[in-house]
Amino acid sequence: MSSLIIFLAGPYGVNMENSICCKDFVRFPVPLKFLTNFHFTSKTCRRQGVILTTVKGREICADPQKLWVKNVLKHLLEKN
Image 1: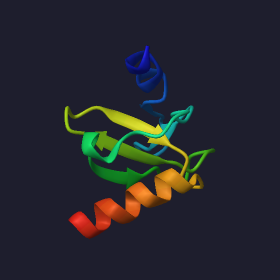
Image 2: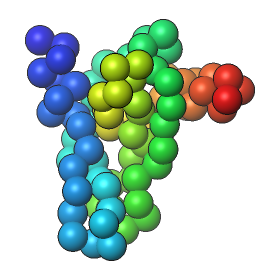
Image 3: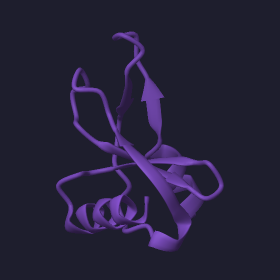
Image 4: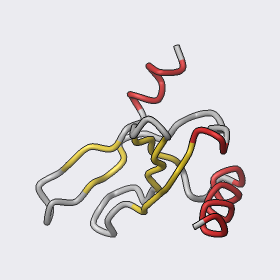
């Protein structure tokens, strides 16, 4: 079930300068041990988001306003 939710919260491309945007955000915290990197969505997107990359190379859209996402970003920045 969780892989289905992750799939639905994945990024998608739009025809706006090859932007990658998030249609929906993951609804539960993703453990740090499963994450390796992140990048922000384009400023041209309707919803600003952060795309988290898993150790398996999957991409998950997350809400950058959520506390758990802020903590993940801080940890990944310190790690890299």
